[in-house]
Image (cartoon, rainbow, N blue to C red; front, side, top):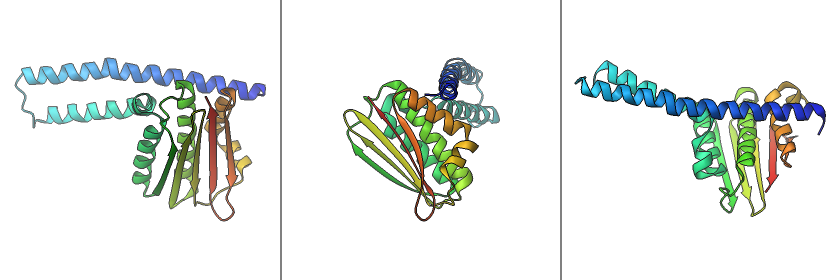
Length: 205
């Protein structure tokens, strides 16, 4: 790895540690405070249909969503496939993009934590780039897991661009590639023959 890639990998790892710490704070401190507020409202006899209860429920929902975005709980409890499926289904539905899923191989919950989060963040960057820039109508996510390797592919039918331009324009993509390279994995982009691009990431464990 070049010094630039090493710096990007360290930056990405630092960002992930900060995300995890913030997610814990949101869960433990803000979540606890909101739960205590709910109990106090109940003790004070505030009706469940009151504006205060409605605002409390909205705050709790927002807290859960932000915490999940910072550090996806499904990743630790259900594995990479489940976490990415939930992420892609939600985001594609919100943007009106058709999603195709393909999962092959065994359970990926045996993936070491640092590889699982590295692959998740890489796929998250790919998804965000497609939804923001590709003007795609269909997106496909493929995850293939063997006892020693996990491979994921994200393809779209959007406008596409040269891989070098994509890496130059997206710091997050470069950081994800550097992080995976540092962990012994790989990340690449390929322009499709007609439209769109294919993003591929893999890691051995």
